[in-house]
Image (cartoon, rainbow, N blue to C red; front, side):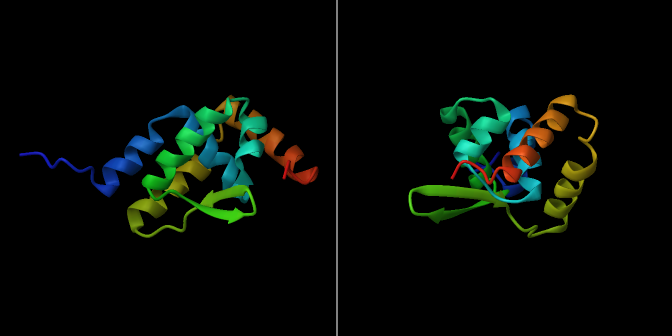
Length: 117
């Protein structure tokens, strides 16, 4: 009989199954970003970014730091060998995805400007 609750591994795999969530994970590899930075970098509406960040939080793939009225998101530290391998895959497997390359370019420019916050 299947469990009604999702396992942690299942949540991580599901998190990696969505292109927007992968793009978020890829751009925060180089450091934390706030929601408005992610909206600007990914060219995705704020509610979409927020919904995907909430999923990534539930999956344990990101952490959030609150500062005044801003939330800053960063990759969570790997808590298992499985988690570590997923992060390694993120670092190497998606380098050839053009959309992620464009996101990385916009993220660097955003960081050079000091971000939106």
